[in-house]
Length: 528
Image 1 (tube, rainbow, N blue to C red):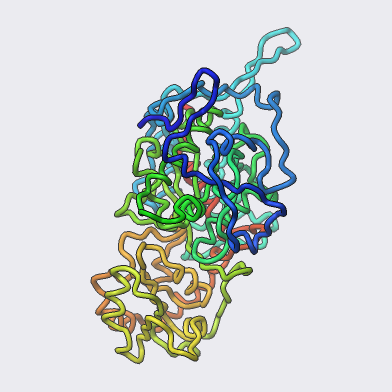
Image 2 (image 1 turned 90 degrees about the vertical axis):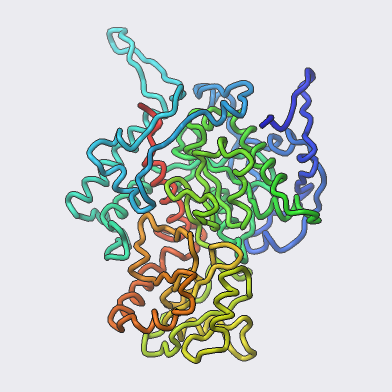
């Protein structure tokens, strides 16, 4: 693949035809609050690529407390390559990961961490400095990357020790994860402590709103915009003050906004403009900084809830083979990689609110066996509606709710909530059912459930393959009451992990997403 822009002798950058479609926000006269970021249309016009990506680099586009970095502050960092080719940007690197999405802790809890980490070839470790002792002997100082890897090694050992001792170090914490809803509560608890102690994220500052540093904070793509806004807010303790401090690097573009602005009016559904935009952004940061090239993107990540987001990597898979994609559309049959990628919960936030109502009715008030209401979006929904719509008084399935019925009231009165995938595998009903205290019934093949690296979904949900949709009633009625009561109580235990807080709080959905990225960083080593 050719790099998407050329530089002539005068230094002017000429855009490819696809990039002539790029738009940007020409003027914002006032700061948009979180509650109305996605509520209005913005005037857009065509722009120059260099102007778009670099005009406000290292300066805030959404937070007044971010200050530009001076050249002297980054002079000790390795200089970026002058013009890396796509092959250089995606140089060979294959991080050996555990054998399944549930083995992240096992991977680095083994006796030999070297067996689960891989170092890319020709890695640049960061500039080292030297000092002299009293006898004028030179002393080699550790580079920033060496310090980071040393800290990660200490974190792995602390997690190993917590698992060996089966002990918690509370330090006065308000919540400690306990019980069988967690695959390994000791490992998860200590890992979260280590993340809070060490983890730093650098959000690239290149680019301008609305395509970068902005995103939808309401409706079904809300977690995409909420995460971007949290990282841009200046309030997150995980934000690095300098990229040399960072364990991972966040590319804060919004797929939802790219589709919204670049594809208007929609004349076709080709993903080429989206793919070109993302590859150009990577090319810019890879040209300007050393961090992408030193790991081949293995410590870089994106976050998106849009249906198209998995396809950003389709045009150039070699470039993205190590890149961490945090996606709502976590479909293994469409290229989602549980060992590298992260599932983002899909949460349908009403305008101006941060969560749906939490309903914890007692089981005795849950008189409906199973409930679903939703449009006929996709094959699975059509099968469900054809099989059950209006045909049973215990399995209530609606395409559109009759007048006078309330969606959340029905979820609150149901034992089981059917979470059928639509056009894509993810469904906001999974999180809605958890908030409603209703045991989720996952009807979605090839879907990697959120936070399944630490949560054992089999303890608080039911999985029914698409082929068994006709057997839904028989399967659910065969579950003993004692087991149902256990699952329903465990649903309440995991509710805190699916709540959106701003600013984010310990163990909420944003911290859980960050922890999933932290786990993947723990499982790679960037030094031999």
